[in-house]
Image (cartoon, rainbow, N blue to C red; front, side, top):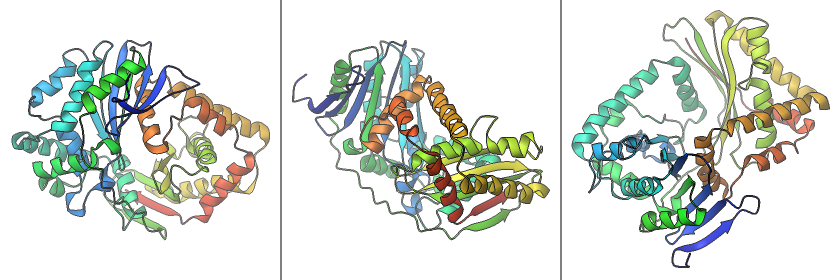
Length: 420
């Protein structure tokens, strides 16, 4: 490994199989040696729907779809067949602040995967015929999403919670905005945001991490776009709202939400515990016990957190009979008030911590998600935050901090939305 390839390289003292490097063009890469039979390779881009201009809503997601539709040397079919012909996968997703383009393949095909990813990021041509065809696919995706109120209620809620900011519009855009997007719009977005300083690549493979870094330098080191132009501003504070949308449905789909801080705030650790205890994915969550198991008011109730770079939301979703909306809200509010008024006994609190740490450990068995998290951790926190370090921080949280977190939720403006 010579200096002309890398500006920086560091190896984890806790995990010698993990290597973080900066390529000659400033792009960061994290490589980890794996004993598995599958290679996981991808690129995280620090751009999403939040970075779109007002007349180009849906562009980040549309680029995610159409980036696979042709380069100077490959047509759409060649791109999709390149990985699938060996049993692999080529895919992508878009959120409000990130896009991730990735491939999974049988071990031994890392160079094929890296070469393909570099080609579509550096040289996507967005051919008009392919663009027109994919435009209809995306519009169908939008329509199918609108047909699912349990999903669309989140977008409707965020439009109100983030009103007055670029975070308010949904990721997919509208049929009208998608029909207006052009190949030139796609290419400009790619040139503006898919830049070395705004991307982090990951490679989890059986090869030595230094060899993996050399491979990344070979294909990605040639990218030399200007620095990304991100002009993000925090959304204005929401005064709270309580809105109802009528769609003649049989069930009421509801969200109760609370504005929060950004993803780097140290209070996120007591928040994680509070959220999981209150409405996490397990049957023993407080809200599932109170609303479903004891009273049979709902089929689904859960709590989720969306932390962004400078703000966030806690959202509690429940679906119920329209006549039971008020009762469910009161029960949810009562559970939060209980957590805010009394410090939990140490034994109860320890069980909350143990359960959440155990869930993290079980979820880490998903190798694809673990690989993606390497790049996202480096992109958002400038370090690799692994499961042991996360559980260590969680075990430092005190019962009083969890109580304070619940109390702070009640002090925020309450935001409610019902679609029925």
